[in-house]
Length: 79
Image (tube, rainbow, N blue to C red; front, side, top):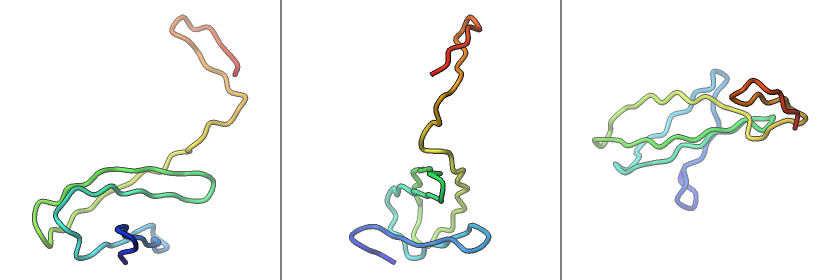
C-alpha cells in the first residue's frame, strides 16, 4: 500500500512480494532483513500494467571487525 509516497510491504515465505498499479516512473526498490542485510535497485517500467520480475540480493550493511585485508602486493593488514 502507498504510505507517504512509499509503497511498503512484507514478502511471503518464499521471499516474494508483488506491487500493483505502479506509475510508469523510475522507482527505487529497497529491501532489508534481520541481521543488517540490505539492498536497493532502481527499476523503470516502460508501460502501465507491465509485469517485471526483479531479483534482489541482500548484502551485509556493515563490516565486522577485526578484518584482514590484502593490498595489491599481497601484504596482509588487520583492521
